[in-house]
Amino acid sequence: MTNTYSIHEHDVVIIGAGGAGLRAAIEASQNGVTVALICKSMLGKAHTVMAEGGAAAALANKDPRDNWQTHFRDTMKGGKYLNDWRMAKIHAQQAPDRIRELETWGAIFDRTPKGLTSQRNFGGHTYPRLAHIGDATGLELIRTLQEKGVHMGMDVFMEYTVRHLFTTDGHIAGCFAYNRNDGSMHVFKAKTVVMATGGATRCWAVCSGSWEYTGEGYALAYWAGAEMGDMEFIQFHPTGMIWPPSVKGILVTEGVRGEGGMLRNSEGERFMFNYVPEMYEDEFADTEEEALQWVDEVISGKLASKRRPPELLTRDVVAKAINSERDAGRASEHGGAYLDISWRSPEDVKKKLPGMYHQFKELAAVDITKQPMEVGPTAHYVMGGIKVHPETQETRIKGLYAAGEAATGLHGANRLGGNSLSDLIVFGKIAGENAALQSKEMEIFREIDDHEIMMVMADTLEPLNRKGGENPAKIVEDLREMMQEKVGIIRTRKLLQEALLDLDQLEIRASKASPGGSLIYNPGWHQALELNAMIDVSRMCTLAALHREESRGGHTRDDFPTPDYKYWGKINSVISKHKDGSMFIEHRKYPIIDSELKALLDVEDLHEEE
Image 1: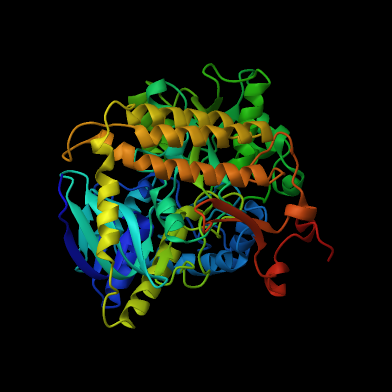
Image 2 (image 1 turned 90 degrees about the vertical axis):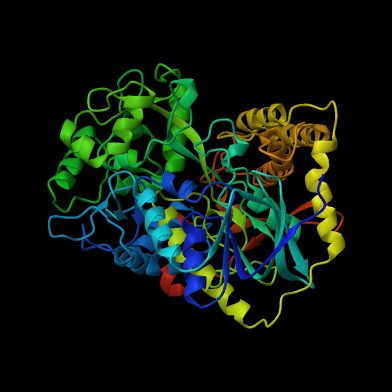
């Protein structure tokens, strides 16, 4: 085995090449610093492309009543008021400019008859707010950012996995990575680092994420000393494919419901009318006739009434409703629900949802212009993540920044559809700018201890020296099935306590796993290295879920089924690594919200006196 490594020096190193990472790289490059962009897979193979429905921004193109204040209110209400209100304000105010900026860089959005960027309805948004390109918005966003970024002079390192963050005197100093193809070792010296590594949904058996989404960014930051927040809040997107088994979990965009898709159970009942929470009663239709009238008004270009179809409730509500229908014995043939858009003309469906039409045609032999889709909840997004300063995106480690799904704060207990894409470009820009400005203040790179480099290299190579242990793929499979069963959409104290014990056993098994093979093209070795991160991130989620004894947003406790506003109403979970190496959890509140912003919120929903 090798004990040699290459050294790279860049002012700013950005880990992750999705929307947040690319936007940060562009901004840092525009500030005149040298930039390295490290991605685990190929450039362009980012989860940003899965965001099909659109990017939320109060452009007010389809409905002039929209504004940033309403977007702020919707985001806070959808997040069950556990959001960092400072980030929600910045996001709502800056999202329109970021969308317009993308257009100047060549993004081709769908247009209104007047030539403006078109916007569609989405769950939890009061007005049509999602700028979109059919149902391939994330793909267009990545294409645009890559096209802009490749001309900026940044160095791109594809198929590299980062294993360690170096800190010197409490300041970030760089990172260690290995090349997934040939196993070569690399040290990246950096004045600042941006984490844009996305989420961790591969920790669950049914998920919309692909193989890259193992939570290593969270673990890297946690191991280095950063704080993690709100890790109990996992979004189970209500509509993932559930049949055939080979495609289980693949996303079915919320855009289907935004274009009038109806959810029905095995009895043909449009069941979402039965699940409208009290806090949303005034905003959603009571009858199918009223819901159909709303859709007709939207399609015809009129200003639709505020009372939207109940399929456009927030994702946590819809996912739990589908789960409840299944438990009541009213599931679709393969255990989910039927999502039907076939009442609209085939031409409209193919025009508005071309990706979904081809996805079901090719993967499930279903023609969605004639037949309903079978859908069910799939682990899709982590609302929690690395704790950051709301205005700079810096973590508590000096010089380490985070943006996008890697960071926490904006979404609270539940993310609204479409807020992810605008989150990436708003806070990716902020992180990149501040990382560049801080790097300019430093004349030289911080020293990295040679012994620490040798230790990380030895740890990276160690699995290849093991003999007779389990295949790491089996341990990964068992972890994912356990998390699905015990830390899934419905949780209890008993199951969560069992999960923590299971994770301890999985950690022991992982320490003995032997992938075999060599450094070159060895997926078993990669999985063996990912396991520690997957286990620690799963432990964060489980520990936070065990402590939060209430149900709210993406966290549902069957033994505590209602929100506890008296105690948990403003308290967020914070996890950090204790000096003795153990995982430590505490609970904190964000600063008191500004009175002007508080006036935008519903006092009765806040459960506070006026």
